[in-house]
Amino acid sequence: MANKQNKKTTTSQLSEIPVDETLEITIHRDTNEIVLRNPKDDKVVRMRATVEESHPSDEAEKPIAPLTPEQFHDGISRLTKLGFAFSPDLRPEVVRKTDAPDPVDDVAYRKLQEDYPSLPYEAGLVIYQTLTGGNKESELLGGAESLKEKSKIATEFLIDENFKADFFFRHALKIPFLESIDWEVVIKTHERGVPGPIAVPYSIVTMVMHDSNANRGNEHQNITVALNANLVDKLLARLTEIRTALKSSATMCGTIDKKGKE
Image (cartoon, rainbow, N blue to C red; front, side, top):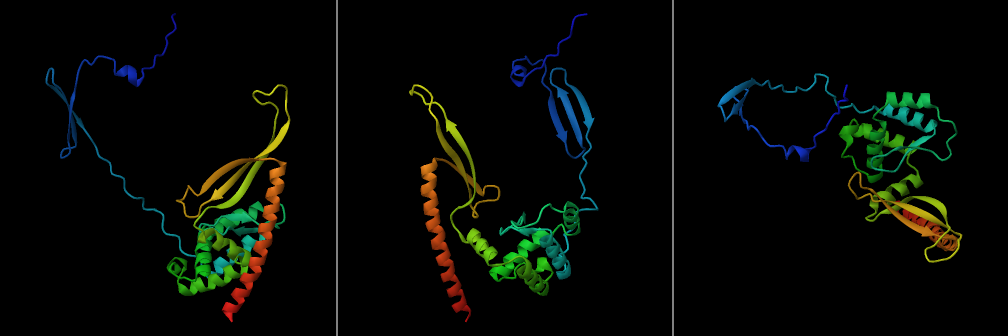
């Protein structure tokens, strides 16, 4: 038997096929009918259409009730005991503490997520309201008194001077900041126009820039540069100078803050 081959017809090929018949289609909304008419012989085919409208489920998602201060305290204290904290973002992420012990208790962490799925959302609101001194979102947190209690909990477990500095650094800037660096070292062995092999090591460094003012999903920009050992040494020297100046400025800020509270 001859093998049958399946032939696929593309869109461009369809446009080249001669049209034998043209059908007129009429849609009657009042009767929910679709009428096909062949103008050649005036034959008509009627089709009954059924319009099915989707109805919202009776079990539609209901707004999640805000945590009580007691629940908020329980969730935050369990989170910190597991070695986690929140990033200083407006939409905070759960991050691992640098001094957290290993390994992670996965069972306890999953149980925490099940018990308080809205904890990161609420923590972000509480942190923002606490640091900016507002209470515009208090109704989402159970009211002004609930926000007051949750602010005390956030200050006890989450907000220290380093967190506060990182928070305002990220959200008071009008320009992108350097968030992280990725790098690799390569060895160049050949160059066009140069006879014989060469051996030149250098690093390819990708700097991940974060723009807090950008739309969600476009916050990150990458800048890739090449550095050799000499440039790295120069960069480290400049970074050391910057670090010294920042420490000096931090001392000055502490003095100014203390005088402002007197």
